[in-house]
Amino acid sequence: MARIVVEDVYKIFGPRPREVLELARAGRSKGEILKATGHTLAVAGAGLEIDAGEIFVIMGLSGSGKSTLLRCLNRLVEPTAGRILLDGRDITALSPRELLQVRRERFAMVFQHFALLPHRTVLGNVEYGLEIRGVEPARRRRRALEALEAVGLAQWADSYPGELSGGMQQRVGLARALATDADILLMDEAFSALDPLIRREMQDELLQLQAELHRTIVFITHDLSEALKLGDRIAIMRDGRIVQVDTPEGILARPADDYVASFTEDVDRSKVFTARNVMRRPETVRESDGPRVALRKMEELQLSSVFVVDRERRLRGLVTADDALEAARRGDRTLAGVVRGDVPTCQPDTTLYELIPTIARTPWPVAVTDERGRLVGLVARVQVLAGMAGQVRVEGAGAGGRPGSGGGVEGGEIPAGTGRGGSGGAAARNAQGEPDRPGSGEGGEVSVAGGER
Ligand SMILES: Nc1ncnc2c1ncn2[C@@H]1O[C@H](COP(=O)(O)OP(=O)(O)O)[C@@H](O)[C@H]1O
Ligand SMILES: [Mg+2]
Image (tube, rainbow, N blue to C red):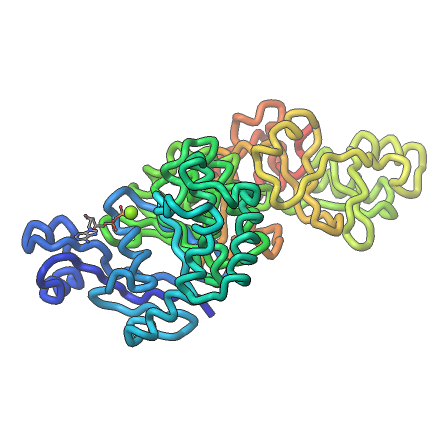
């Protein structure tokens, strides 16, 4: 079950929001409504499901309604219409007292400019949230120290905010949120005021913390690269409407419209896409198969090499057509004498960026292996280049979670024909032995699997 469900939420600012609601429901735009009524349509029919333990990013240009939507989640802003469900419970129906309790127990917020109390020490600031929750002194002190430890500021506990840099102050803000038991963190442009280096550090730190803490984080940013780095999923807002919800890969691979596409133009895809997104099904033989079987397979499929696996599909190495021929001439019974064990390998979540040096160095395709050393895919130069050009097939994000997480090899196939040109010496032959053509279908696909010499 989703932790937070946002159901058809509207927020209209102005004196008579309910009257304006009809216009918004009829699909009139934020601009039209402002012109006709003087009201601001800040959030328009937003629907979302945020899963427990994910980092859910809301992204969009300034004024697109991100902060308003975020504040609707804990009703710091009262929605004009729609429902917010927290673990299935409708929080738009809570009494003020119940609401206060839910807000304190479940939510913590981190803002761009974290209002630290200047006359309290760092520790005092982190304790503050617990103090207003009524936690007794010894316990809140311990929790605050733990949170400071987590963000690397324990030795600054007795300093005052004024003695800290901006990045450190933001860490105190994060520690203050972490110190509470709140399992949902609402972070509104939390890193946007930091300079780029510190900002990247904070992003890394948040990811690290999250790997241990598994909180549910709703993170707002207007910066796509931040969204791509942090988000398990990303919702993109425009003029109050949610125009796309997808994984980072999905946003890049198939932007819903020109607005989304315009965000993604400058993105370095090689740092977002992984081997899983581009890998193909590898052709394999077993060591016991012997050179003739391997040769026949390579000839059928027009491959110059093929991976060798054991009974459990663990990678043993690679055998080339030349070596297999040699072995066959010698009368070898198995492939043992000609298996090359020094094949480059990577994991499914290795980024294309990390793969570039390997791909540049090796004449062979890279074997993608899982944590048990089993061969799950192959990546050749063609796939890396196509992936960087954005030609990646990514499974739908509908069910939540990252695509291809099942490790399915099929999920990572790129459209046929993307290997055209650009691949230098790696140009693949298709099944007819002709140069690969755009859209050449099955032929192109098979040829890539080891056509690389
Ligand atoms: N309290 C408010 N009163 C009137 N208009 C508001 C208020 N808060 C936000 N808005 C308007 O609602 C729209 C969305 O604002 P906001 O949610 O702050 O966007 P974002 O966080 O994406 O920059 C903007 O047009 C903004 O001017
Ligand atoms: Mg905002």
